[in-house]
Image (cartoon, rainbow, N blue to C red; front, side, top):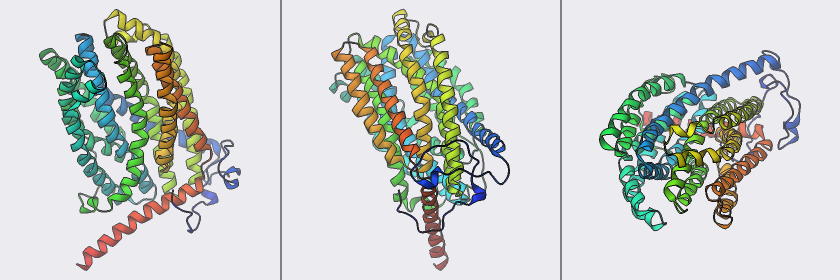
Length: 497
């Protein structure tokens, strides 16, 4: 966080959102009653804010789900080829997520702070520069990751994974390398459009890609086995481009994208750590499953559970995108109390959604595993784990939404510390204790995961309750102002020359 700003406070009485209930925060000024909006009463503001959030969350849920299906559909086909094909592709996908896509998504998430606050401050041209800068940085990061992927098998064998599964997984992940570079473009573009609430076009283009992707995956897998799944994923990700044009926020390529990279990295690195700590915990659990008796059954069953929870996670991820966009836009515009009220609304919606999905998941526990596997042992084992998945869906809904608040506000570093405590002090040690000491096997892993999710949600909630929203608005003004001043200096230097 920046030091206390000496500038004139950004909050005006007419900018304040109507009172929506009392949340304690970091100072006495945040505990006061919010005055009515100049343009209407509390009900009008609620209806408008709810509409805005659903206009972002709805398409983003669809975008996230469709993009995830680009990876999941081939795995569903591979699951019917046998346990070896499923377990090796699952481990390869897990490794790719841990070392590739999670890093791409984490670094791109910095744009939720930069572009979101710039859009709220009406500094539109800066958004295109931020986008280009992110694509350049992410593309460079892809190079060492590709080298790691190419040599994955020795690492898996070193940590005790089955040699046959390790070799097959390496073959699969090598074919995923083109997908990695696609992520370096797609993820920044998603954040760029999301922060402008321009997400409907994304949903259309991803849907078109998926229509092509499903038959292509089936045909390639029939001809090439599990290798066809990786090839199909790479082709579809590169087809998954967006053609929307925004004249105000995209004014063409600029060499400014190569300037002033350090401020981007100051937020991108904590954003990446924040996201990767969570992903790596789940990936570590998958690797532990490979060390259990009957590793193919354990790894395959756990993979199905994680794929299921990931699909369900798309809904809270949509809410996360909505609250991140609304918070960053409001802070950039100097409306901190409206940002705070938007957070309260989104958290309420997320809690309702989590409880609803929990009930739905339990009701279909004996049916959905057949979507992934026809092996009776795998199906029965997955069905018995559903109660643990149900608990995870509720905790996920809360923590995902509050993580969006962190990205919108720009306090990713603090959220990264909370994730470190939740997953590496609580979740993993608990999972290992329950799995190996109490011999609970896969059930012990899920007990550990749930402990981590609940802890993470609790810590993020505590942080959110103590936020000083006026200070966050001042910080946003400072961040955007520094970028604007740097842009003006470059223009002045160019004119002088």
